[in-house]
Length: 170
Image (tube, rainbow, N blue to C red):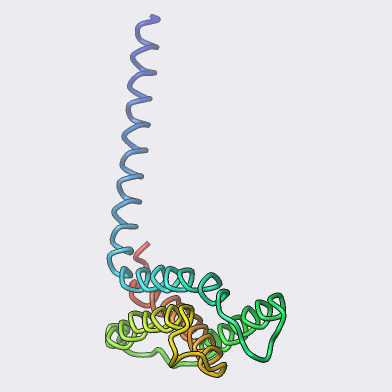
């Protein structure tokens, strides 16, 4: 009699494991399919964050403006500039009509996403004080455009990514 209970318990545990593994396999295959469809949007979100954290606030914090004497006020000015223009970029990213095939937007997204690397180059040139970049307006414009494209790029990718997955593909 104890052997029967043990064999029933063992077979029940084995069935439970199979159910667990099949659910995990189903979940993994579904998740992998969604990641495959949204890869470029996820990539550009991560790449945008990577580019942002390369230069802001570390590289921008090593520069200075002629009309601000205090280091603390300069840092506050640069952070405020970044946050204001990042917010404007996020607003602009959410105002577009994204109807139609989202795949047609890939060239634009790739251009903006990879084009943001120019701000890294400008930021480093400003940091090492290349003679053509010491003007205050260049530093502020670089910071503003860098933040604007950051907010815009991330918002657009977050809007388009769910459009790439068909309804019910969960």
